[in-house]
Image (cartoon, rainbow, N blue to C red; front, side, top):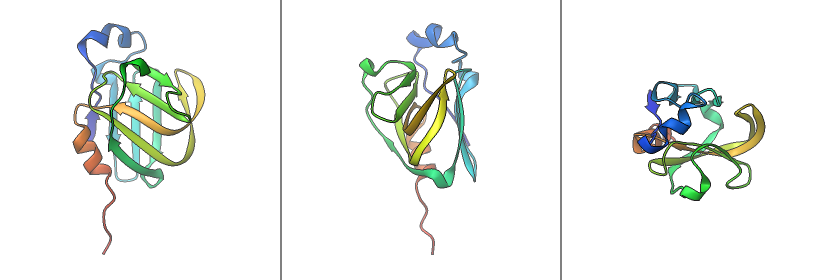
Length: 128
């Protein structure tokens, strides 16, 4: 399922510079992987088995809007809003490219139009 990123109107002109448009800013959840796409600045696939958790969180404006590195150690953010933010935690740090710059990331913050649906879809299922 595709989850569009939340991009507040006031930030859209700045996000447009690196392709952060609604058509190119989303998270795709598939049975085996999750793809995080934010314009030309970020495109990363993660096996679902490597995702430990996804949970709603607050995100401060001073953390910045857009493609962000290092608000928290080993973290990155792809945010177009301070609302609807989800923190995705990986089993181990992963190498990602943020606007072409390599970064070790174990937590990824992403702003979504439907954060609750995304969290529900990534919730672990009980095996019987």
